[in-house]
Length: 274
Image (cartoon, rainbow, N blue to C red; front, top):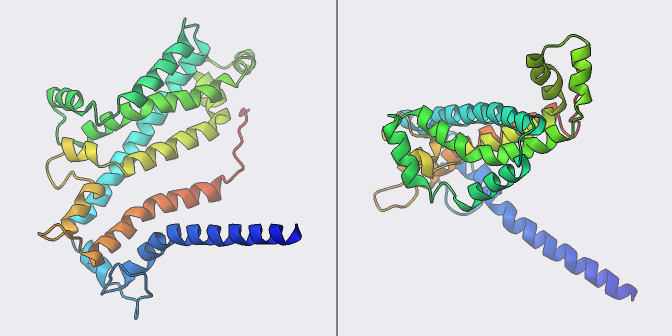
């Protein structure tokens, strides 16, 4: 019986190692290939390490602007999503609206069934009539609209967990109704706001279809679309440039995760400010 347990653990360790290696190799390639002036699909140490690929990518004006555009779209959508979702969740939680929970459930289900890809034709027509084609604002509004149902659903649980006695105590202390949200509710649902904010930023940062359809000029295209200029006429990627640009493209999201983990980690907490 002892031998069987050892064999089972050994087999589990081997399978786990193989799976971890399988998933780690692409990440390892992404780390090593950008510093290899003759990068291929093989995961090898660059000898010697070089910044030639990064110089070529950063020397491409449209590629650099694409990274900035991705930041504008992701940050704008994140701020708008968090702000609107927080207000909507607070209203649905505190206001006596008949069927509020059913409305939220239907809204979430509808947004899951009717994805952005399916609704792209009517979305395009709406943005066209608003005169927002080929604008960053148009992309931000469309991305925010797609993120809001889930964001409201997530924040609603945080707000529902707070008893109304907090606002009543603030009122006794002289707080105005318009002060409840920024001074009482927001500090307490800070973990939810952070979760929704990071989720929205990452989702918009990696989006491709919406900006590809709504934007026209190179000066407005995000990095997810600009990456395709590093393909040759035959549709094959230039691995040296694609790897360097992919590294730069992943870096902001990785830094955001590291910052959130360093700043908050598992120490999410809130409290009423005096």
